[in-house]
Length: 541
Image (cartoon, rainbow, N blue to C red; front, side):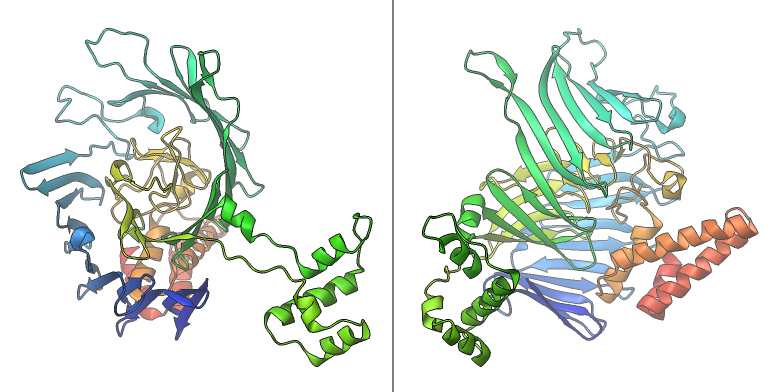
C-alpha cells in the first residue's frame, strides 16, 4: 500500500502495488469533494462518492453514482445535526438544551416512528415515559442501571457488570428458561471470561487474552453442539481468533481459515480498505530465500549446512539484485570468483506467488460506521443498517463476509453481543460501557457513559468521549488533514497540564488552572493546524 499526498500532507490517493486503488479530489479549502474506488479508479470508477459542504463548512450531502446510499444532512443554528435524508427514509433528531440526543423520528412511505431517549441528570437511561407513565424513577444510584426492558443487571464492588439476565415481563409465568450472561475480570478490570447459561447449562463460553499494552490479542470461543453420543455440550475445540494492531487501531483479524486486514484513513479510526486472504493462498505465497534454499539443500546427507552471517547477507543482496534485474559488477565479480554465473543462481530462486485477495472499500457514514462493503467492480458485497447507538437493525450478507467493525474503534463480539472498544466493552442496547472509565473522572462525571450525542461525537478509545473527539473530527472535516489522533494527543496533554497547574495554583472549574489549560490547548492547536481550524475548535469546545 502506498499513500499519495500533496502540499502539507493532504491525501490525494492510495495505490496497491502500481495500481491506483482510491483517488481523491479536493476543493480550494482541501476538503474532500470526490472519492473514487475500483480497478478503474478515476473518471470512470465503479464507485464515486461526491461530497458537498454548507457555507459554514458542515457536511451537506454525500451522493454516489449508485443512489442507494445517497445522504443529505440538515443542521440547526447551534451546529447540531438535526436531519439525515436518504432515498429510503429520513431521520430527524431532537436534542435537549444541553445537547443530549432526546429523540429520533424515522419517516418513510407509510411509516412515522418516534423513539424517545429519557435520561437522568447523569445521562443514564430511564424507563420510556410513554411506555411507563407510572414510573417514578428519576435517577439511578451510583450510575448503575439495575434493569431495563430487556435485562436485569448486577454489579460487583468495583462497579463492573457481572451478571445480565433476561427480564421476565410482568404477568408471564416464570419457566426458568431465561438466559444469564456472566462476566469475569482480571486485576486490571479487563473482561477475560464470559459465559451465557440457560437451564443451568452453558450455551457459549469465551476467553479473552491481552498483550502487555492492554490490547486484545486473541479470543477463544466454545459453542454448544451435539457430540457423537447425541448429547449437547460445549465444543472440545474452540474457535480461535487472533488480532494485530497498529497502535490503538485493529488492523488484522486472523482465524483458522482467513486473514482480514484493514487500512484506515490516515490519522483516524475510519476504516477505508478491507483485504481478505485465504490461509491456503497465504501458504502458497510462502517461499524460501536463496540463502535458505542453498543451506537446506547444500548437504549430500540431507541435514543441510549453516552459512556464516556475512555470506547470508551477500546472498540476500544478490537475490534482490537478480529479482530487480540489476546485478552489480561487484556481484558478478564475486560470482566469477566462486565459479558461478548469474543465470545459474537465478535458476535457484523460487518464484514469487501473488495470492488471490478480496479487496473491498468500506463505505461509512459521517462518523466512520461502516454501512457497506464495495467490491472493485462497484457491487455491494455486504451492507447493514444501524441505529444511532450502533445496534444493527438489519444486514445483507450474501457472501458471508466477516465484518466486525461498528462505531469507530469498536469490534462486534457475536458470542456476547458486546463491542470491544479498546479499553472497555460497550453494550449497544444500553448505549454505555459495562465497566467504569479507567481514567476515572477525567472521562466525565458518569464513568459508564458513551457520548450522549452519538450522532456527532465518538469514543474510539473507550476513554474520553466528548471534547477530545469533537475537536479531532472538526479538524478532519474542515481541513482534510488526518488530524483526529494528533488532536486527541494534544487535548489529552492539555488536560494533564491543567491537572498539574491545579496542584500548583489551585482553582476549581473555570478557575486559574482551567484558564491556563484552555490557553495551552489553543496555542498548541494553532501551532499544529493553523489559526482557522483552531478558531473553529475553540468555538465548539
